Image (tube, rainbow, N blue to C red):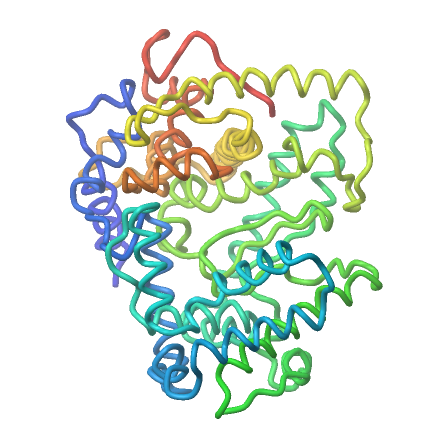
Length: 482
């Protein structure tokens, strides 16, 4: 395919997601995502539907095809388990596990038994799943359970991250993407460090980055992947015991780490994941292969879109190293107070502005509840810092490489395209029931306010779209931590 058609496709994707009847300076989220919200319906199996969720659904379809060549997915879970195991026998097994390992009062034993059972409902019979379905409908608004193959894929994916990651990478991930983002990441980090240099944040320069996947999972001669699962002893005849064997193995692996030095090169997540992570006790950022795809990243799309997408994600994760939690860890991942009193006081003062800003956002879908500016502070700091870092990095790229040509059919310059893609990666919708719960429990602000809050604080956005001072997207009071 030539570059010209690709440019048209990118422009078409951006345009169909937009609602141009809304002025960008009134509500940029609705302007950027109104078309997306109009076209997408939340599946009956889901409490939320977003760009992230769509990419995760597609990833699971890829994994289903890969895993299906290894085992029959239909043999997973209830259908297989129901023929071989009764609920009563299952509960006896669970109870015996707890009775043998802990000697506590009845209330504590009941609580721990319940926690173990609720986590294993997918492995129990229909009556357990029906009870959970009623619970989820009330709490989250979902009316249909996920297809069994998805439950199976998710279980194998979470239990054998590197093995599944190898299958996914071989099937979908181009090595060139890893090389491009590996070069892309340090640029964003270095530019981001300029923002932090006034407070001598050498910590940013010490951040270790993992891009795409660990190399050893694709190396046939490397025994590390095989050794990771060598201790597992599974049986084709005993499904539920396999579940317990896996739980025991994971617990043993976690406890073993208590007596070992921290491995700075260890990947904290598998490759087949649509997300990104920062580990404060490793001072490490991870961008799995699963997120290195459009709309976040593509070697075929404008750098304005790449920096607004994966660039923002990189900046977000870097900023987590300096949020209300990450700031408590030094450049080597040690938890200690390395801040001066002045810096700490200034951080708290700037953070309080953001606490109040987000705390004033009223989410109608959640019954008119206000966002908790305190519990979402860390993510809000990362959102604000991330888009700033990415934008500064993009301007640096333009300075070196020159402005990119406009996309056909879109009357937007390169700066506006950056902010448009930043907003569109957060397009998504919630069920009211889920909104009412997530506003109390989620450490992230709702998708709409992740966009609005960050851009209301960013002067460069208002300049790009010529928003008048005092307009909804360009308020007089702006908050900034980094």
